[in-house]
Length: 345
Image (cartoon, rainbow, N blue to C red; front, top):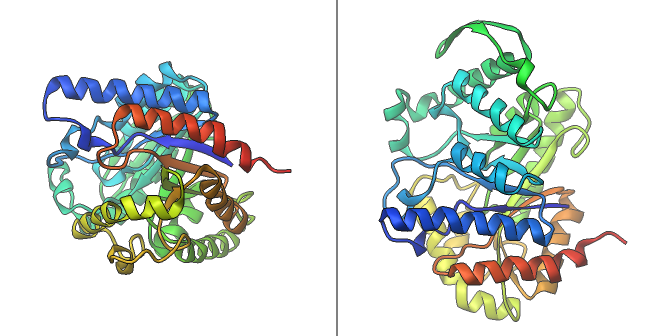
């Protein structure tokens, strides 16, 4: 398995001041460096706009990844997840090509549809247009990356002029994943992308279903099953402690508040089943977090590896209220005590 660190969350530790925004950026750079030193191979950040406190403190994806490309040049860069309908395909293709060059071909563009209603209107679109707009955006970007001249006139975009294949390092174009929580999105990933990415909170049973949908869709496209025909990647939050039982007793109520807030914001049941926001701990296979001792976390990760064939696992270490120093220690402990247990015999 390849492990990455997501630096998207963890915004509860900052006040709404310029000084704290600078501190947030610097601490995320520290996390990325610690993850690299611990044996992680990629770093990621996701996107929101017009967020309310404290979410409005999040830095934007592309400039942050550009900075990280200089700080941790050994690591792959992942957008997890960029909201596709908010972007222009020409500018996004140019920005991704630039990051592809900055990282020497280690850029992974993961696009999603978004889910927050208020994020679409300022960009001249609506939530109802997000699927066709995203598909057209991908179509134009692939032309930009692979063709010397682009001539496109579609429903949302009209593009005529030179492409940028001469600046693309990873051929035929930068690695493209689609983030989704639905069967239709999983099939779209098989048809239009190099992989599918499941963010955050999906239980194992739903992940198993989505892998089956993905492999069936790959077969329909004449491709081999994952991982040869496409990548099945996912994200999990990690909470290290003395034991899973003790960690769950301490932090599960806070997890469930977080899940409830996502559901209130419009996240679909396929991504966060309603039963997960109850009071009872339904068990390791259903709770979408890695919790417990290093050995227990390694066992949970091995479950995803062995049952789903997951090769790319994106990890978060930023539970609400965990201070920067503890996050750094948890990253280091994970590299020292968890990763060695996941090496194949």
